[in-house]
Each structure stands twice: as C-alpha cells, then as structure tokens.
Length: 225
Image (cartoon, rainbow, N blue to C red; front, top):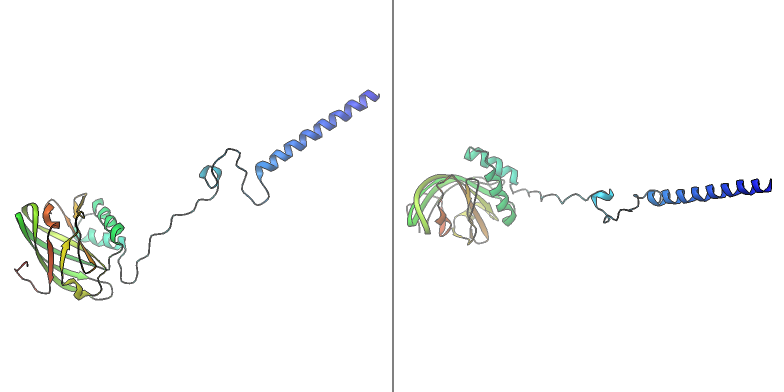
C-alpha cells in the first residue's frame, strides 16, 4: 500500500514539473503583457519577419505657394506635347532630383538649324502661379557636334525665378546636363542662380543645343547675340 502511495505521489510531481516547464516556455514566447512576441528565430529587431510595424518613407516635399508639383508639370506636359509617354515623367523626375520644384515654366515653339555651329529661335509664354504670365522670345547660338534642322514644341522648367523680368537674361549651358529618355531630351542652363531646363520631344532635338546659350527678350529679334 505504501508503495502505491509513493508511486502516485511521484507521478503527480512529474506531471506538475512538466506543466511548469510548458507554462514558462509559453510565457517566454508570448513575451510580457503588451509587448510583441519574443524573437526565437533571431531576426533583426524591426524586421518584417519578426512582425514589428515598419516605418513609412518620408513624404515628398510639398510645393510652396509659388511652386509647381511634379504632377502638375507632367499633366501640363502631356497636354502640351499631346502624348502620355513615360519619358516625360522620367525627365521631370530627373530635373526635380537636381533642382527641386520649379516656380515657373515656358510653353512655346522654336526652330533652328546647324552645321557644327547653329542658331535657335523661339517664342512662347512664361507661366507663374502668383506673378502673372508673360510673352517671351528667345534666340541663341550653339557650337558642337551639331547637324540638322528642326522645328519643335518646347517646355522649359524654371527654378529660383525671383520675378518675371529676371527671365530676360543670357542663360549658358551647364556641362553634363544633357539627358535623353523615352523620346524626350533635357538640357540645363543657368544665369544669376536661376536654372532653366528646356525639354524637347521627338528626333529633332540636337545634341549640340546644350553647348551655348539662350537669350530671352521681350520682343522678337534676329540678333542671337
């Protein structure tokens, strides 16, 4: 009889000890109340596998009152060029990554021709959000590996324009700023901290057009200098 009692007591002791181990293990996996589960797999803290919420990427900077967002520029460009080509959005994104958001743009047409040295003439309208619109003309020489003639629609993004009259300058080319994506070409010119980025479509844009300058005037003139 005593042997039976000792055996039963031993069985209860073993069962109780095993239950304690299981409860401790479950508590360790669940973690303290109100905290995420433990990390038995060894994932880095905050990793997607461990289940921690991921931080959202910082939002894109919002345009100021006088600036145009990238979406506004792309929508305007699609209507102006009559296309929804992805290349335009890539060009605008490329320009934005370097110079931020424009506070003006020009829509117009231009014609030009070249045999090594060339000339370019154009006219259009400068648009701003809070300083009105302005009719402008431009002309200028170019030098380089530059052959052929063209007539093309042109969209020019303008950065850091302090006032509309500041457009009447000679804008010189920035070296290494020519890009060609999806049927669109972009160059960059600058004067007095104002950056001008002409965007042209089609096969007519010329490789040498970014070497030289563009002079903006309030009236049309044949003098490119």
